Length: 169
Ligand SMILES: [Cu+2]
Image 1 (spheres, protein in one colour):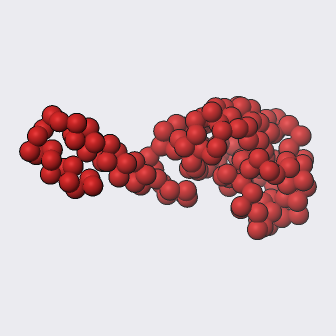
Image 2 (tube, helix red, strand yellow):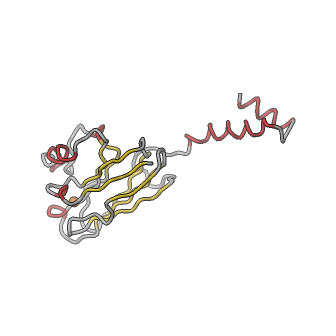
Image 3 (cartoon, protein in one colour):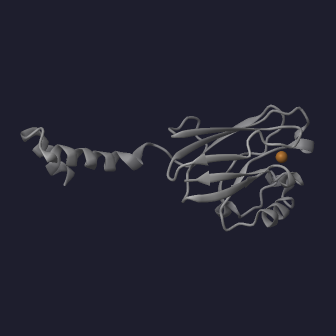
């Protein structure tokens, strides 16, 4: 159908088929912007969210807003100076069905897995590495369905202060 539209475009440049062709191309190219979940060095994105974690056990931002299906780049930096074993930080964005306290209580059992509970990737929208002082990590994800999603640092005890809400419109 797109091919036929393109052929028509050459014959009759300003007919409505030009518009249809345009829509076909958008449809074809839209989902194909080389964006994927993962940690490749540079990816296309619609919005860049930056958050810091500090030695005061705080996020620099406890809420942010994005729109459904946006390609989100999230950069998290630990701006503190305390050693990672004492004050490591991460950001884990939980799916709506997951209970934050239960998840964090499970996480503390996995010190050798950066305090991320093994086998529970399916419960998160995205997560950074656990970072020591001066370190940063960037992740990419597609904004999920509209709603409010909690994010949290899973380092033991940090969920009391280090949590926030991601709103998807
Ligand atoms: Cu933390």
